[in-house]
Image (cartoon, rainbow, N blue to C red; front, top):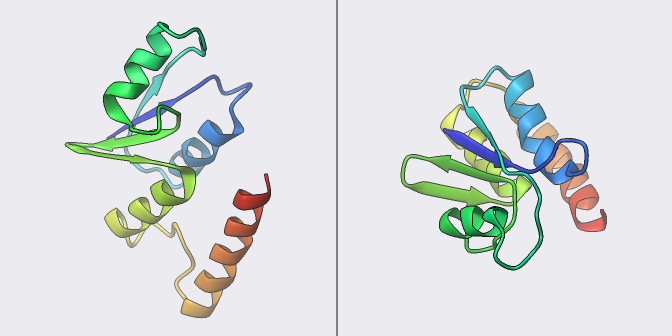
Length: 107
C-alpha cells in the first residue's frame, strides 16, 4: 500500500492516516508530494492520476485508490480487522465514529 500525502508540517489531513497507520504498525509506503498549487504543477498531475478529488491524502492498495481520511480509516479497518483501527465493541465504535465525524465535518 502507498499513502500519498502532502507536507506533514502543513497538511493535518495528510497526517491523520499517516499517524494511524504508523501507530498501528500497518505496512505502507509513504509517498510525499510537495505542495505546489500552480495549475500545471507536478503535485496536481500526480494526484489527479490517482484520485478524482485531486487532493491528498490518498491510500492506494493495488488497483484501489481511497481518498478522504474517514474513508481511508474505514478501508484500513476492513483490511486489517485485528489491528484495532476502531474499538472492538459496537457501542464504542459508534461513539468513536461519531467523535471522528464531528471533528471531520467541523474542521
